[in-house]
Length: 288
Ligand code: MF3
Ligand code: CO
Ligand code: CO
Image (cartoon, rainbow, N blue to C red; front, side, top):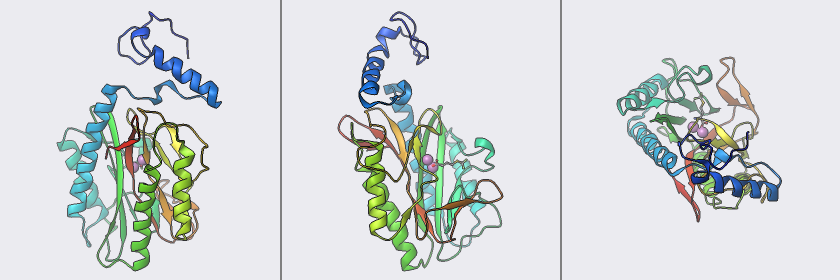
């Protein structure tokens, strides 16, 4: 990255002079980077304009999941869910981020039972009584991304599956509660892993949360395991997801021959919940 002079136009594309735009913030981040011993990327803090755009995209993402939650039922195919998500998204002026993302063929991910994430909807996969079904929605509205998922209990779900889904939901909440300026990513992962393991479950480490907003997957990677005080510090204006995947058995995952579907290595159940979060001056705001 070239060093800018005060009168150059800012790297962020605002058209403003650097000194009137990101210069002070960049100096501050450089100082923090030195102090903490790792590079904090200058574009990890969103502008007010970007935050407004991300907020709108996240609101639509939430609305899409609410729509799915109302309609989803035993006996339909996962392709049916995909159609709902696709049509609702485009009819609200947005685009489904999964479609075509690194070749992903559908508009949403639907992951049932032992599928950890990235399940590909199709006509043949029918939702059955007792299934736990994760639907992951990401939309792009005016160029901004919102990303969220929920796991639905379909019909008569076993007590153990219900407990796993509830624990995954609590893991998300507990992780989010760690979010405030100058806490670290490690604080989030530590809290999640501690709670999940206290319940006898394991936490997936092959996948994690991620910066999100101007792109689908941005820095930083947000692990759901970790050590207190380790990893990148959190700063106001950062937007990222927390999306713990909690397993009934071992934490290891395997990707199927379709190159997307991630399943648990032992074929036991996995559950997940996801929100997009904004770090605020004194804590967090859940955007989805
Ligand atoms: N929405 C997922 C996430 O939470 C990513 C899905 S990538 C896709 O990060 F290509 F499978 F859609
Ligand atoms: Co995500
Ligand atoms: Co997602």
